[in-house]
Amino acid sequence: MEDFLATSIPGAEDVLCEELRDLGFAGVRLNRGGIPFRGERQEGWRACLQSRIAQRIQLLLGRFPAASAEALYAGVRAVGWERFLTAQQTLSVAAISRGSALQHSGFVALKAKDAIVDRLRDQTGTRPSISREDADVRVVVYVAGDKASLYLDLSGESLHRRGYRREAGTAPMKETLAAVLLRLSGWDRQKPLVDPMCGSGTIAIEAALWAANIAPGLARGRFGFERWADFTETDAAALKELCGCLRAEIKHERPRIIAADADEGVLEKAKANAKAAGVRLTFRHQSVLDLQGGGAAGVVLCNPPYGVRLEQQPDLARGMASAFCRLHGWRICLLAGAPDYEKTMPLRPVKKLSLPNGDLACDFLVYDIP
Image 1 (cartoon, one colour):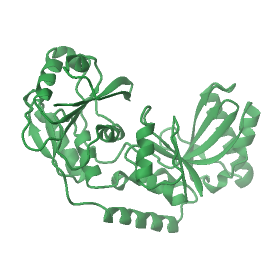
Image 2 (cartoon, rainbow, N blue to C red; image 1 turned 45 degrees about the vertical axis):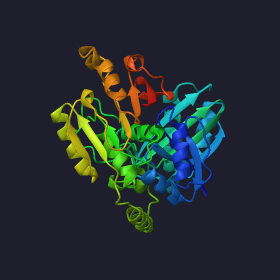
Image 3 (cartoon, helix red, strand yellow; image 1 turned 90 degrees about the vertical axis):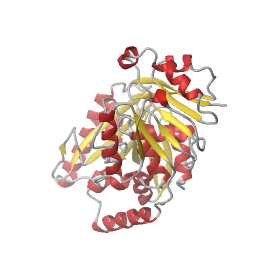
């Protein structure tokens, strides 16, 4: 059995914990900063393939006292790095330090890197090269107080990069954030879902992938663990078999998902991305102000503009509030990066929580329209 850690965007730990439990992972515990779970080695692979919310999946290599630089060096050097690294693999080391005498994360990373390289030189007579951009083996050191935890990143490139977004708008939402919003919205994957300001289509595409039970990692290139020195041909065959099992679980019943935008050029990008993702959506060239009810009630989920674009359209928030209030029986969900959206809604949100969109502090607002 191995110990893993799944990381998410800040504030989404509860949702990630719920997702991992739904996916059947063992030993899942709620923990701020990352969700631990346990399983055989292939469970780490499966998490990379199936989790829509995790940013990264990491393998715990060990924990040890690290009250000083010397103790940190000794603890890192004691790990059998020759299992994962040869002179043919490249290496990167990142560090996070909180409440420790080793308060400079750059120093922690450098000391850990020296320990890894020194051990490999002594054990094998060679050393790996360092790559800051695209390392084969990515090590993460967490130092809290006088203890250190050492992880290997299975993901490689961040898991939000699904591989389908060929075209992006000016401020594209991360795919993992879209997946978080869908879970928080309470959407049941059966009712209609509308993103009336879809941009490059991320929310609608993620909704379609989730509804069809298409594992988000199936469209990616190689994961980080495939580049480790101990990833064998037998492992490659097992990974291929796992992907085949996940493809066999894809569903063919699809709910109605509408992606709309007032910008026709942006809508074309969304169409290209949906095609690359292998999902079918209903597209509409339409302003959010023209939203109408009718038919079965569903969920509206969107990330409205903010900042300069909002200042250029001072009546947008008020117009959106009027349009939303026409949708009787619908649930309205907004990732609001400006206070105007909550101020102009005549209803109190049934749910409100803070959730960042990149560097921007946002409020996720949920309204049930009577």
